[in-house]
Length: 195
Length: 195
Image (cartoon, rainbow over all chains, first blue to last red; front, side, top):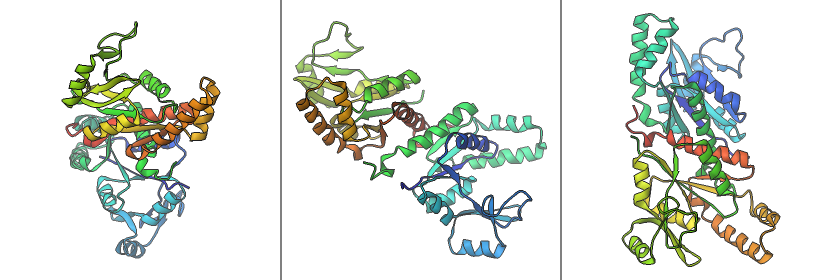
């Protein structure tokens, strides 16, 4: 069984990463998300080991200390992390694994998983991102200004990635994301025993 | 105008490179073949500067000596070569250029054009290649044995390439070739000023 690849998909929030990943997974049956570890309590519909591994802050801290996490972050007081063993288990089973994480998480993965493929999803411009967020009408102007400032900061990580998909047309961007996955499967350095 | 990419497509003869490139060009209007230089006399339907640059052996030899050729080869007593200036002109105009050349030509390009993307088109196996050639019924068994021996030797160049497209199903292989082109256009190192 050929070892699977690891794709890290990241970018400023609001760039449309989630929609693009939904489309990608709908078209490709060799991809898997890795299950994260979190200290957040489960929601009613969430199941242990499927949606998350729900752990105590002590267990999380230990996993972190022992270097078991490919990346981790604190969001609104809860910890979230990607257990490296989970990712590698899926890869050994032949799945190509996708991590849907923020730019700081991607930065952490880069230091631990050299073979990973880093894909940056970006908005056509910060102006367009602002218009899109405004069009949703769900955010106050102050929140919106903060999100745009965050996005600008996040755009600064772009150069750390291997590929950029500019989400202007969803159709075109989804095609590009899929093309990157297909092309990386054809890379020779990853198939040394193919013949 | 963004500088175009250079794709070098090669592989054993009989692997189906020509059919795959036809499909690729039919789906993509930003690709151009580079016009080669040759000492072979033009056929009635061929036009100077469109099909080839037809030159004398002396002009060809001078171009070679002066390092003007990205790669060159002698086939049945005639010389064929790729003028580097032609490739670069197309790239400056924003075209992504495709070179359809043999593995030795690809090897030469590798030494002169570091940024080029090397794609190896291979048959599923030498056995399948043999069956395909035999099914055509156009070759004598001795010619067939020679072609298979050539193919085996050509397969030895595989590791010099960035990507491999195994032409098992033409449909799947054409999709992979197109994906490589689309993905390479998304590579960040090639778009330093994209934002």
